[in-house]
Length: 588
Image (cartoon, rainbow, N blue to C red; front, side, top):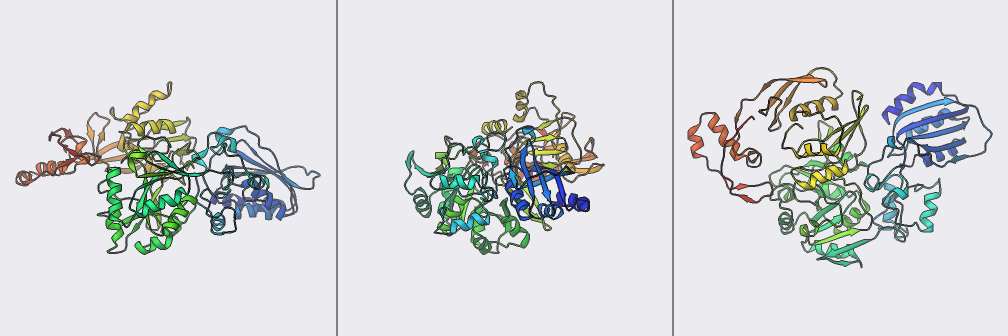
């Protein structure tokens, strides 16, 4: 709301105390409780008028004697999921009216409507889940206008229930009353439901479905050291007991992930038992986005040795959905909560995915479909500032502001590894959710479903899906530097250094370790690290001993190279490899 605050600070003195105003607000202002918020605010300040959704805007007409106070209230108390990018107001003639009403939406300009990300369980819904007398006591799909699924359930715009995966669930009379009452915090909360009318859980073991007490049965299996797939907000997680070496070993076998660290989920007291949690990290963990946060493990902690061998940090998140909350509280211990996928492939979100049964002992699913996958976001705090390792659930599809305005709509298809895609529309960059490595066909299909200059990069094939589009190829390392400039709103010249492995250069040779001078309009390669041989090509990235051997030879240390004993090779899935050692020219 910082932009809105600055805007109002500049113009608040111009707003009359009385009369009638027409106000237009744009940004993330639909599907986040903005109209009922304005309705309650108008009644609180004794104002009359109307409010409606019109295309990408909320249009408000408000009349009375406390207009300036009302505008200040918008700036200070707007709904937590909203994000006002622009606010315009004008004086208009007064009308004879006695109330403030919410009007039917108008559906023009829907392509510009911004959708809210999926948001973690709010305090009000959490309190309901704790109350044995509440009809949503421990209900695993509790939500309201301030929390719950959004992006992952939307099929079309405008954001109304018939255009979400909740359309199949007819609301019971009590949910319908909440949904249609402007004074209720569930007014037009599209995923609203309860145990009488909402989604239900089921447990599947070896193809057989168990609907009676599925969560209790899954918890029993977890306590036995089994691995359970759990359908979350944006896809399936694989979960097991984090402090059980046997359970973790079983999970690593299922996933083909020998030593890489796993993300964990726990309550805040549990997290603080194993990690140091400074104020900035705690704020991130408990934010509406509820990402995975990389935390320093306490010295000698056993959990980091089990879940993140060789690391000094653990990736923790709090239970951000009602289902996760019930599970963690009943287990009363930290759980591994890693994406259900084969390593480096996209998170599985389709209930019929054939790979899913092979990754676990049982599957806990529900009948609310996921339309758009969203893996968990990952952040780390450095110098009291948060930095993204992975931007996805909780943040996508909100745009990033750019320091320029593009004349054309741009689709960037990303690199082969750790890819995502990005749409640029004017001065906004809409970055997609994390996908994975497009070396796998599943990731390429996922990127195509959701939406550099190397002839072997599979992303290049996606261009064929956009006939007639102008194709612009950007060298891998130049793209990294340009992204850093845009992220920091730098429009002038700079020195950019890219130390990101290898990539095909503009001169047809392999580049690696580049020094550039220039800006967003173009840059020149002015230096690079000394070229070396890269034995085995891409295999050297997966098997670093190959590069170590090449460096010894490059330094003239023939004696050291002759003593070098290569360990058994392994491929990206952890399987042993018998590939012969070959030499190809490459840069590093």
